[in-house]
Length: 154
Image 1 (cartoon, rainbow, N blue to C red):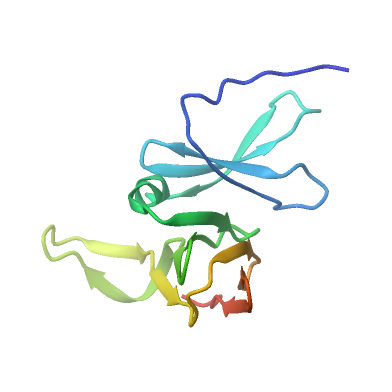
Image 2 (image 1 turned 30 degrees about the vertical axis):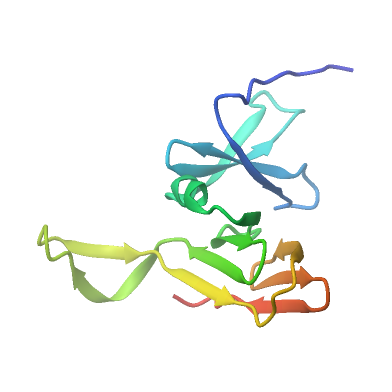
């Protein structure tokens, strides 16, 4: 039996998630302003595989004083942050645009846009649990289980 040690002290741990049930859970670390999702492979030569980047999520989560849970969809299409009470923030990955959009300041065409969605729960009860799937977010409070449908379209 082998034991491996890795220093994670320089990168803030954000959350862990199961992307593939046949694999170990992935973990998300802050790298500068971004959040990178890593898949451990203890039986392979390359022990860690970078599988997704959530742009600016490290920066965003640092500004949320009341955050309680973080998660992402197994297909990496979005990440989500849940506060202690009431609010859920959903950050969609950048997606191609169906129309032409120009940046006014720089005058260049923008090829893709990332969206932020905010859901406000109709309760003041504390959030006890938070789980993300590819199409839904489950938010458990002391009295109600909220299911938020996350659109798979742009």
